[in-house]
Image (tube, rainbow, N blue to C red; front, side):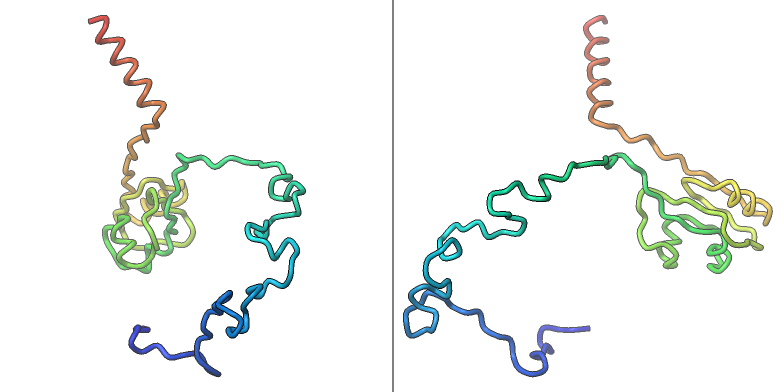
Length: 172
């Protein structure tokens, strides 16, 4: 692994120093500071950013926006039954799969899919199972235990609950 004390400059020379512009005539970039004489690009505050089209409506603003990203989408970590066979565990859950390196990150839950074969009896605790995965686990003498995910409470749900509670308090 690289360490700050062991870093070496790139082959063919060191790191080039930043050009210090506008520091007098002797610096080589004095007077106009490397901007040339006059014109839009010589001025301060020139509109020289990515996507600028000279005042014309830029492409990224002309193209219509489409689609929708659901903020409440549940994304599962996916594992096939064939992977469980190779792990050699009798009890499998999300934490053990992450520890074994079968899953990179926990995401929102674990889903077991039915690709591959299973010969050993394994107890699997997951949030979701495909029908074929459940069938293969039970056929091998194992258990498929489903973990129930509590529903996410959205701000809209929370507000509705508060209104109901306030109305009940007024009545009672």
